[in-house]
Amino acid sequence: MSSETDKSVPSRHVPLVASFDALWFCFSPVHQLQQYYRLGKLDNCSEKWNALVDCFVLKTKRSGEVQEILEAREKVKRHIWTFRTPEEASVHWKGLFGHLDDME
Image (tube, rainbow, N blue to C red):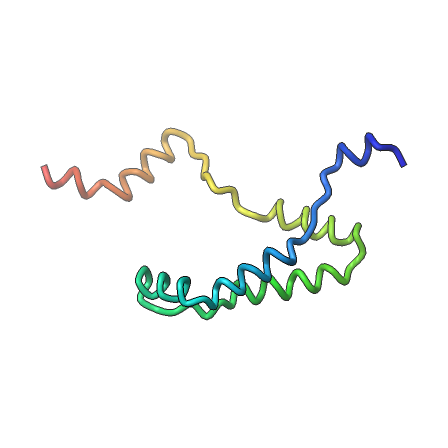
């Protein structure tokens, strides 16, 4: 194998320890009280459980198959920023804050 091909393709891995730590913290009193204070309800930690189970499932698959699954998830994953044209941004802004113009 060539070392160039290994460096050019970033290896994606499933963070099993990080998923377990996140689940462990989710059940801590600190997190639960924080969620109760912010949202008014306790966290059932289902997202953390699902992430941990997902890690276990991916650990049982072949390396190439895991890479394909993770790449497909990245493509489907929505970007944190929504890019808009100036016209779209204007319409969106007026939809959110247009009522403030009526106050003057």
